[in-house]
Amino acid sequence: MRKLLALITALAACGALFSCGQDPAETDDPEETTEAVTEEITEEEAEEETAEPDEPEERTVGISFDLPPLVSAALHGVFGSDVYIKENTDEIHRNYVGQFGTPVEIGGELLEESILRFEYDPDNMGDVPPGNLSLIFYNEKESRYDTIKRIRLDEEKHTISAKITEPGTYFLFDTGEKAHTTVYEDDEYKFRIAIPEEIELRYVSSYLEDDEEGKFKVLLECEKNDKIQVGIEYLERPGYSNTVEMVDAICETLDSQETLYQMGSVTGADGSTGYYFVVDFSEGDDKAYSINCFYPLNDTECINIWYGFKDLELLDKAMTSLESFEFTGHYSKPQDPAVKKQNETCPINANSVTFELPVGVTMAPGDGSTTPSTDDPDHLISQIYEDCRINGYDGLRNIFIEGEKNGIAPATEADAYRQSIDGVNGIKCVRSDEVELSNGKKGYILQIETEGDDQLEPTCYINGYFETNLASWTVRVTVIADADMDRAKKDELYKVVCGVDVDV
Image (cartoon, rainbow, N blue to C red):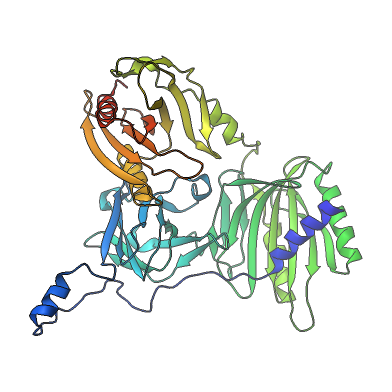
């Protein structure tokens, strides 16, 4: 019963109307200008003006993209020293229908309204007109995506900009005809369904999550609408022998709570049978209804289509939509991406990396095994060298050399890392360099030092990020030593990292 109540709670949330959307300041042009003002000042005032300002000044941080259609992204405004902008490759923010380019993550403290500007390549837009692009913001506090309504398109400069007020993840979105069409087509599960014209499709996600009853994936949610909403989800419920058993159990609970309005089956356009129930969440004059329809994929998996509406007359439209459901291809259960990625072989081996170690330091090749980094199956780490043996080199703790696949260019990764840690909690970037490899590729080296705390010793990190000829793959070198190590020894280690060469 606990399992049923958890699912009922989730279904009840489907009937609650949500709000979304975030507007920058009411202006047609997010760019601001400042007029120069000339006035007589005393010598004392002039000295005060040359002193260090008390208030933060306007500045800009930005990144460049390696692949079209986006060229760069920049943030301009008044913000704290910890602000950074970098590419966001988290799985949860990838593979949306209509996603245009790579999402960017903005972190740190925005002290006032700032301008986020994307530059696009007009020769690599495909069939996407610039006027079809909108800006999406991931609202982490409420775990939803909001559309920033007011943006500025400059087709001469090939830029799209908008005012923003808070850090988070932003990306451009091709509305095209998809945001207002009455037909939703799913590429992964191969089905299509007609959506009532009152609904504006909002986003599609391919992020698979676990809950206490099984797995689910939100495939579609709608834009803000006061009358009716729609959502489509993939569900896997191994606790039930089939979909009919699950629906019957849910309806039994709803009936005991006197909220079950109607139940039955529906036949889709391709002959598929779905099982639905309507729930009445109304309280007095505050009307609220929802309908859930489960189309089985097999014994444990199904597609759940739900509608939330305030007017019962819209039930007929929802039922018509459910009857238009059809599979357009053969369904096969998707492979777990974590399993697929974990078994991917790293194309870089120990023989591909050359370097000269200090006297008294040796390294043994790693086993080359590739595993996902953290919870991201697309971020792979492979140990190229992992066993560091140190003799007579006081202060050196370890050296790692790894193959890394995360879709981020080495220059971008190095710069983002530097901006995210420099000056935070006593951490400082001592120096950084760009070096050229024999193959014409480049490496980016940082020396980071920490002051330490009660649990950790002061530490010196020397990190190198090196380009290869392989798509998405880089070589990463990490040296860990004591922060109070002799300066000459640190310099020697820094030269070791700068001297790494990659033949890939």
